[in-house]
Length: 60
Image (cartoon, rainbow, N blue to C red):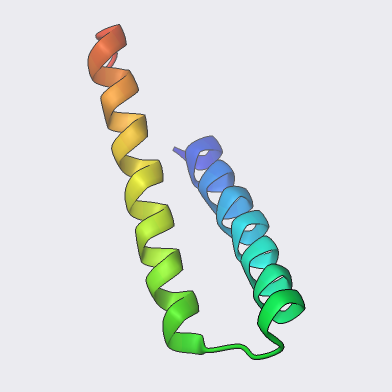
């Protein structure tokens, strides 16, 4: 479980930094609520794809 948590944290940090830098570069403003929505959707899709792949491979 420790490896999975580390992968989730690393993916979340990387995606968040990418989102923040892109938003600042293209709009010049940052909205915490929009970042929070992005974070929830990103983690939801990441978890969902992990479960889907586990179901397809029979390891879930």
